[in-house]
Image (cartoon, rainbow, N blue to C red; front, side):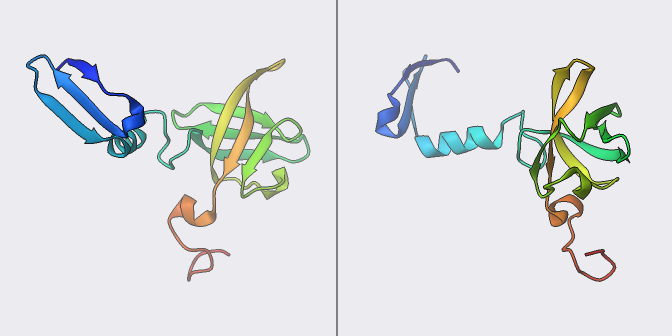
Length: 135
């Protein structure tokens, strides 16, 4: 179907007429919510970060490694990484922790520049402090 006419956004109603002159009308809020739900760039956690797992931490060198969803290992520096979310310091990061990350080019090449940590219940699907779970 090819749309020939779309009404203005100010009406809060999406109106369109197809080639056969058939008219369609939908609430604009419904159209926008459908678009938000289908965003191909959103991660499974609902944000726009790449997803990975911390595989190595080297406190003596102030560096760490994150394994990406496709298996590639990318490094980050404690001094240069921006932390978002639950962790407030690189010392709050743990091996095996699922994180979101963003990349950037540095003088040393492609590196992780931002790490987002999630509440423990978001990562493993359990409630911290429940039986058999740390916390």
